[in-house]
Amino acid sequence: MVLVGAARQMEAPGTRVPGLEVLAEVQRRLLEREERLSPFAARSRLSRGRERSEEPSPLRTEFQRDRDRIIHSKAFRRLKHKTQVFIAPSGDHFVTRLTHTLEVAQIARTIARALDLNEDLTEAIALGHDLGHPPFGHAGEETLAELVPGGFRHAEQGLRVVERLEKGGRGLNLTWEVRNGILYSSKPREDILGEGMGTPATLEGQVVKIADAVAYLNHDIADAIRAGLLSEDDLPGIVQERLGRSHSQRIDAMVRDIVAASWAATGQAGTDARPRIVMSPPVHEAANVLREFMFRRVYQWEGRREEAERAKRVVRFLYTYFRDHPEEIKSDYVIPDDPPWRQAADYVSGMTDRFALDMAYRLGFRD
Ligand code: MG
Image 1 (cartoon, rainbow, N blue to C red):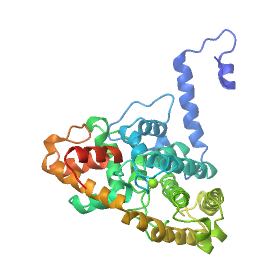
Image 2 (tube, helix red, strand yellow):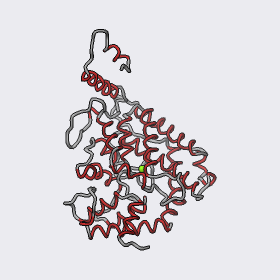
Image 3 (cartoon, protein in one colour):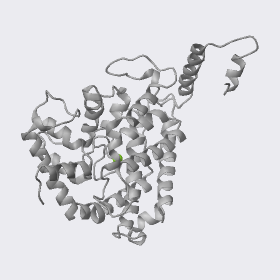
Image 4 (cartoon, rainbow, N blue to C red):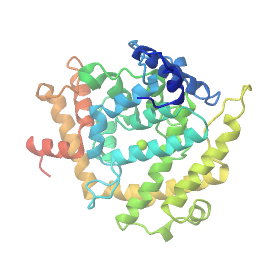
């Protein structure tokens, strides 16, 4: 089977190309393709590497392998049954943690490709960025943050999932660049371009961080309208004027703006200026107004609903129960030598919404 021109040349009459040589050629081309990216793009050949070194794959770059490992992980499958914002929504079209993650990956890849950055690294970070989220969205995280010694942050837990908890305690052994992107993907409330816990070391990580905000601001509007909480006309004037009056207009406006505003910086080859992924000031302002509006009108409202209050009680019950009875944890998702509070935090934060509810009621939780 001959699929590409050069392979046809390699099969000139009288020659027989052994499989190994084909694979070496594929590997050479994969790396060559990365060399043609922006000078500021990450390259797998320059990766800071994995904690345990591995033989390279002939068919995939190191970042492609990381993306694949994340997709095949248990934590990734569980995203399907975890709340994004609305707990136990009354419809099939509400966003889940999984569909949110896929939207982030789509938006981030569009930006990365437009800026000639490394799409494979971008996709790996995007698919992994929410693996540490506990059940029941913000309600679950807030409750664990109060209970776990030293607090609980989903981004740190995400790193723990890929470094320690997956694969029965061995972790996924991902490259440093993907782990760095997962750790620094979260943002502070005040500013969607804010640092949060820190700025990702790669531009690909920065792309995911901003794409996360583009995705959630927009799908949360759609879900809030679906829930009857908002109508398009309720959105602040600056949002309607600068971002648009429909779901697709707003995403498109934000993505175009990010590409255009970041372009100048990413084009400065040979200078010392460190490029950044940014928005233009007018769109940045509108996006922050939208974020604040969503906090007041949607997130705070959701946090006060009875479902959220019950979710907090369930998480509190489960965490306390398993901290006091760590021997009852039947899961390979904890490290047996860890202190009981750590085992309880890992076990409970890994649960899906429905698993947590079932488990709590089975253990005697009553509303
Ligand atoms: Mg996210």
